[in-house]
Length: 382
Image (cartoon, rainbow, N blue to C red; front, top):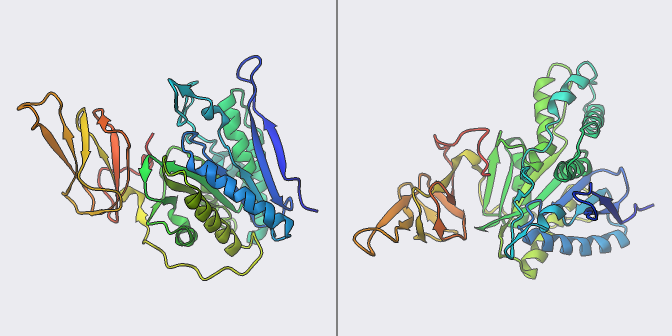
């Protein structure tokens, strides 16, 4: 029988008389494979994913009624009710926890170390058996995590819902951006296929981005355990996890959301989660770029930012992408500092803010050559 569609899971109360909860939608059959997990807006001020999730739910309701969900699909359409409540002077600020826990999409539990110790000497020559053993150990390690505060409980709960999934799609957006994807270099084929379905003009691959974001917390145990236990038995990379950046914060449109939801479901269809013969895969819109080849441009001083290049433009090394205007500069009206790209590639994301502080990151250019200042393990912004 199909599993129940909706459950409500309460979070620890942060104050007397206050309680928040996650709403979890499930489709297909519990324990069926492949399992897909999709969540939206762990950064609560990244709204496009909330709308895409609604289009997904509507389509999944139809697919469920038609008996076409062959695996299991779990959708958390609002992944961060804590951040959604963080209003300051009428502005939603949902990237960082007001209670001091930092970025909502960082510092998810790292399960690899404890799992490694429990798996030593327990692997089989059968990769399918090892997948089940690894999943069981990861779930057991996670269940033992002691959490008290609301944000820590939220992170553990989201990971509990996703840690045994074959596919994890984490829906985000940037400030102003083209649609782009982040994924591990170990899962190039999967993310290229997803990028082709979405028409993504940028795909970013990393080996170790650092920060322990949600997608990494789901997928990285598999390649870390595979490397550490290579002599004991085969461990497939049984979880494909990716961050899907749904353009910019203002790109909340039904036409975009409907197209994106349809593309995500076609990807699940190709992966056997949903019944039906998929259409031919579109030609990928890009070749993946290394994440350490992205020039994350930084303001050298405070001032007014004036872009000389627009989203989607190709820039060359040394080209001026923006100028920084000093309102108090001399002679009046002429004090401008050019800011040049260190990469040749596509300008795919930029900040909506035009008054910047010294050291503020404001723009991203996806190049194909690693940059010397980009450090593995420190590739993600705060």
